[in-house]
Length: 324
Length: 263
Image 1 (cartoon, rainbow over the protein chains, first blue to last red):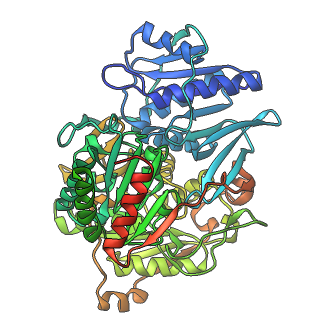
Image 2: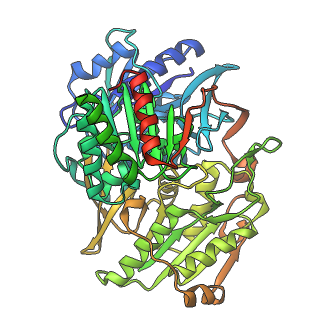
Image 3: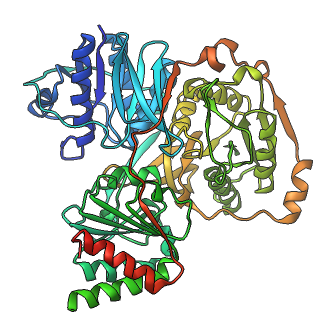
């Protein structure tokens, strides 16, 4: 049976991650095409009805490993390997996100299995799954297949759409013995929010700041520009990690996904991890002094120049226009 | 303790990268450089060594790659590694993530490190995964995308950003840790260190020297296969303005925004 097992990530309140729900939806669709079944793996003591609820996205069964802790990869590798080994799944699928990369990679070693990452689409070819994986800054798309089973697929953030197709899933509890090295990393604190709680997901206009701002103070330019247009300020992971701006304003792989009417990128290089969180913006305007910055590949208007000269004048010009 | 830092030679950022349509592999001719993320891993190793919270006897740079990869090792040594190990064998060419992780784990095993550090991603593609593959083979705990490492009581206290915010994780040694570029500002090598780099010990190893099974690496040992390469869906190229006269540039931007009713 060409089954597909999906890891369903959840937060401390038991809410499932929407990229995981997208992955379950995708698995259900693909399983239907290859004549198999989609299932999900949940770790931790998640309630029966919450687990069964994954059936709505197409999971026929939900394997629950109650004693396995959520939040670090290696115990979940143990659980995935156990369920894949016992039930004979042909594929493991992960939605975008950091843990999926780690668990998928660990499984690769454990099961001596092929892995693909940053996958944007999966298709059925000759009865097996073939993934589409953009490479070289998205300049080419590689079709990659697996020479043996199981195959491990790690999706890119937002690659798979959520689709409600099914009803209720059967919940099956599984006992998992943890590997000795899996308990040698311990989560001391999970999900700490750093900096102010700001809302960027509802803004029609976002000014995104990146490393090109040069220093924390550079964000003042972004805030003034955003104010002039009635927008909000967002940030890249690099500057959030550097402590220049709050985590709640971060776009991308481990941050928010946004699609405003205007995304104005100031000093943002446009790395894939950022792109996946904002590429669906209606209009993208980029200001960057590096003419080779990847962001110019997907912006509607690219301005090659010094943002420290351009942004203050742009703010004044917009204010003047609005006032006039 | 002994720290091994995995490094990789990648095409220089300025080089237009392409896939060789015959082999379906990255064309690695042209200018190359040490993967920028790996310089952060080397710097992290040096900071642990210099920090004094735990005695570090040795920092060893380890790479797998063709003969040209020696230059990446020279750079790693110039940045502070005491010596280097080069796993080079024609049998390794065409290895996928599964095969590469296995081969790297075998060469690391021969060094018995207490800590393996590496950059979280390489400029040429296999992002985030190698550290976790290597760790499972070595049966060590691991964490990727780490932006802070503190050593206390013989353990590591690491911070990283995950799905719901910042996580703090305590990791016992030996361990495999991949680092993000926010972890530190790598130092510039001194002229003396650059000049001296070629004199530091460099061990060359073939697959047989570290017990790598030939059938598990290279194209034959890989579990994935690139079937085709296609161009991405065509996207209308955006307009580009070079800022020569800022007043004029700003006028153009305002007109563009106005046209789209964004202001």
